[in-house]
Length: 317
Length: 245
Image (cartoon, rainbow over all chains, first blue to last red; front, side, top):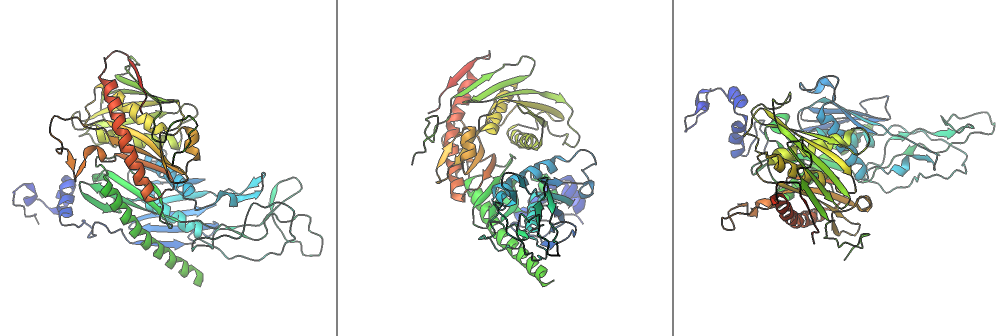
């Protein structure tokens, strides 16, 4: 099963798998010259993506996103990206992988700067109390493009909603910083924040309804189950650069061979949230920048469709 | 549309630059770089024998240690280390000394905006001072986008926080060659137009980002000239300062 090669080098006598391990760059370049990748994808195509909502029932919002075989699961209740040893052979227990720390930071920067969540909405009593939303993302299987899978699962979890139950509450005189009327992107059903009130000692407690006509001493601080409405949603695409080829959504093998990676994050109002290129041997010229942005726009439409389908699947329940 | 800046600079004006070489005597190479009030000290030790655990032994390994001015090392420092490591790897000739490690230690002396670009410039000067073989130098700049869409260069910390978004950009330095014009073109663009590293914060439109890249390139051409001049001066500790227009 040797490869035919007119220059008569070792590849003529070697098996494909051995050639792939010993000369990975040449193996890939042979494919790129035909505008295709070893897994059969064309250069600009990302892997199959699925999103499952409500993966963790105990959390207020959760989602499982799968891009190719990179899987990230998340529960929402500060933004942390964990890479447990299950995800990759190079991760050992104890010290967190370098990639985990960097993706964590990148994610928190992106989510906060994209304006998807208005932090003022998390305030409870102005100047005194506020909600804290903890975002934990667990990588279950690391096969390249970690940031893309993590961002997609974060966005899906923020948009995940549960059943809301109505409450009739005596209006209070507290000034509320929360505004319930928002113009939001399509995902207006969102994380459910429980109703709470402030007791005499000034602590926040869960609100319980007193049924027997007694005047409610404690009054709810937030009137209904608050919906966390989302601003414009960020979507990302990681590309690997090699000479003049741009490979969208690389696998971990491709990432390790072509050391230059570019992550472009755009939001649904077509603004650039982040253009992240941390060094690497290949330089990004203007034409490359515009090509990567075009690929990201294309991917954004695909991801919006996938999220829409996931939501309409949820609403049927 | 001129934005009024607190220190009276025009949008295209950089802060006073200062670069000193060979300040630490034990380190194999050292340099300090300051842009206005932001000052970073970089030291290079290497090449030392052996590479780190998961690194390729057929190439030289670069290790970056970032020391903040105060506080413990957290995620932001680890991210800066990773970005600097990848940037330096792309300018070093890694195949010349295989199976060695070169450590670059960055100490933040003062942070007044554009910290990462300052650190990259300092590290580059320190690498030259240590004699590490490089393909070309890297020059870094910070460009920010104001609310109304205009681009402002080299912000102070206050300006960085007030602007809508900013981008740290690193370009290769401009080449001086004896060969005629046109021999260093890649796809019709000269080598120094390629972006080595780009890190953005905040939202901006794609056109604003491309405007930042253009302005950044022009500023980096001037920075390259300054870097070249200051590195060519004598080997003994020299203090050169200049105001880029």
